[in-house]
Length: 313
Image 1: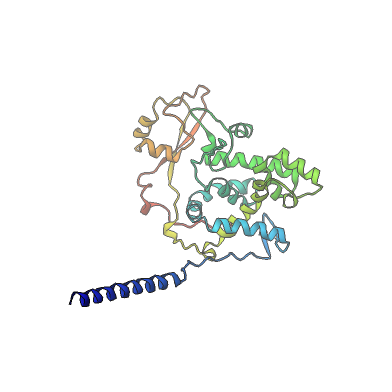
Image 2: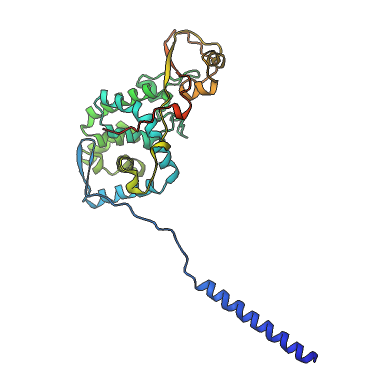
């Protein structure tokens, strides 16, 4: 009887082991399931800064493909850039137009900072246009412990336009202007001369600078038609401009938090709308006049904000 029971138990163990092996084999035989990855379609040509760029040349095609692929699959930053554009492009675009700078330079700002107005890089470049302090001062911006106009979007955009116009006078084409914004005017001028070409598209440069104009071009393609690249964002999800009163300050401010409270907002809200304020007080010994943005009553409530969608045109 015991021998019979032992035989049954042994048979059960063998069967269980066989079943386990079979199940494991079935598991190993299953093919992994991956999500679909789609490669972006690169056009044969595209309009960029008022000219038609031929993309049938292999190196031009591959350079744009690299940037467009990278941007498309950097989902978080790309989504933020698309949403922020509705808030900040309406400020930047009129200044570009007034200075006869192509509106495609909107996308250069995206490349520089993802339109993060508080952006600060390891190279100590600041603001949406990512000026370093010496260059900012060279183009007319105040940079101090109390005031840093690299974070003033209107003034920094005007300063960027002064740079773009100076560079365009040198090169006569906008792709070289863009390359110089990344690599410096001196380096681009030297390389154009040494390599006997007229356009940054034809230059052999460091990888970062060589990629730069194509990165701007890729941002334009994606942001002009996000849905074509899989980005589905409703108009309600876009960030909206905050309507503000402009208060002029021509003297010192002993306590910005107290000043903010007197104007019906918090210090945090004051700094959010005026990131150029860099300290809790303003000595203003020179008696300069500063324009301070103060949100209108109720303007920080999303339902009260303008629901318009900005179109680049």
